[in-house]
Length: 223
Image 1 (cartoon, helix red, strand yellow):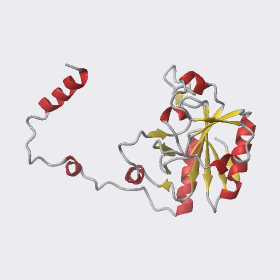
Image 2 (cartoon, one colour):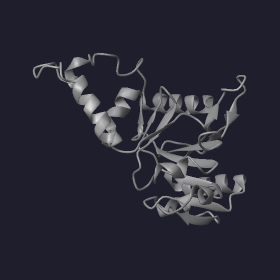
Image 3 (spheres, rainbow, N blue to C red):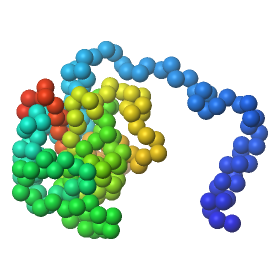
């Protein structure tokens, strides 16, 4: 008997006392909680996202679509990045101004090879203002999960306002639960040892988020 068969057998035994007319899971839990805290305009929601991202020590940039390529090129140049990992579905115009060598996202790339890449640029699925969280779901413009967990520098582009929501419940409504999701609140960090904060433990040491939209004036907000 395989491990899979043993686990499924345990699940079946645990469910033997559940009657067929038992309340379905979707109805068993009350869903009358607040969908967001307070009332905010679209601009205020975006501002809250930027504030919470910076509070988590992400570096936040704002720009218009016309300035996006130059903004990303400037970020890579400031980092001294010579190579940048590119998901297969990323808009090629976003990197039109950079001189860094573009590395394709390949399934056969090893963790060691990914660790040698200077930076990675992705889009996102949604961003949550109240928690300062960006969510990746493995779409073509975001690539596989490990390309944003191994390289030390991650640039993530958020389209404003269409990809920004106030709360986690609103974000969940937009996400497909069967997709491989990564929820990111600031750069990877831990304080497990004597409460000393160490960054870059389970993912990138530096997270830069670009809020791009017609109403976004060019600006940087450092954490």
